Image 1 (tube, one colour):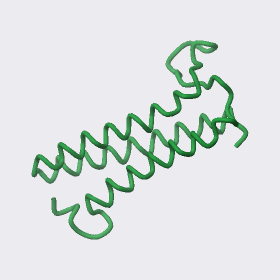
Image 2 (cartoon, one colour; image 1 turned 135 degrees about the vertical axis):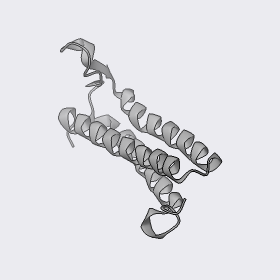
Image 3 (cartoon, one colour; image 1 turned 45 degrees about the vertical axis):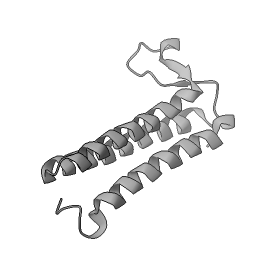
Length: 114
């Protein structure tokens, strides 16, 4: 794991930062629950209308999924000593966290008074 042993790209720092972003996103959603309507557009794959709406608690699903994904990737990364696999798993967690953060924040800005 030479890539993750030096500087800003250490494995522990990257995993901690990804974990912190997901937890902060969940706290942000929880703090702003009062500003959000009871249903928010979560299911963009469905036909337009009521089928796209889900409960506001569904905004906890993307960061929660990212935390589970990060945990699984961290366990796999610790158990295998392959540099490429470690890099791939850690950075896939980072990219998934970035995309879920953008999605949740866009939904909250679309329907809430933020």
